[in-house]
Image 1 (spheres, rainbow over the protein chains, first blue to last red):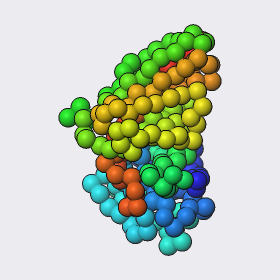
Image 2: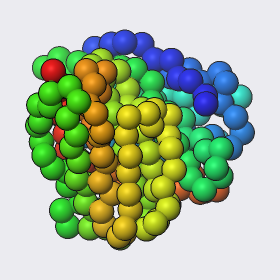
Image 3: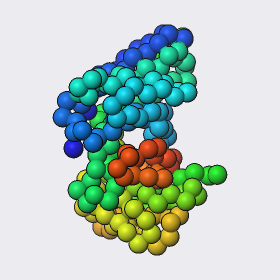
Image 4: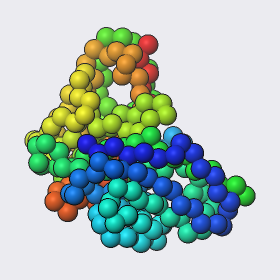
Length: 114
Length: 116
């Protein structure tokens, strides 16, 4: 399974953009890239996902490098509620072929400063 | 919609005891998953199911069993609990998980299990 590498922690000021980087150099051509976030004592929450093209939704944007070996999650205006652990994840077909597996890394703890 | 619900929220077990963690989803999702999360780490897949009656092992299945008799329920059974199974357990479900990617997985609030 493709492994992801993220910085352990990052800080941002409130109302400024945040760029969260992720390396996934061993990703295969059929692996999707997902981002989830997790608040303390809660389950992970879906943020965004993509395969090759950049993606936008109401929460964030996902920029995927042309060689797909890295990606960046962009929060356009950080708020205090965005403080969480952000996981960059690869979405890989399981050996059974019947489903896919999300492989979580260790995540980046984002602190948002008022 | 309640989404994905898990019970209990917390549990303390003694070594060698057994228990069942309950998971229910009301979104009519075919795909369901059990993960464990150790302190400071990401989630690891224990078991998954692609529909009622069909389950398969994930990355860390040893010491656990699952069943899927209905679309809604996916219980996780711990037999002979060990301290290494102290963790937070999350159940999740998704609408799809195939060629087009998994899409969004919906997670429950988790069960915090301590084995002493």
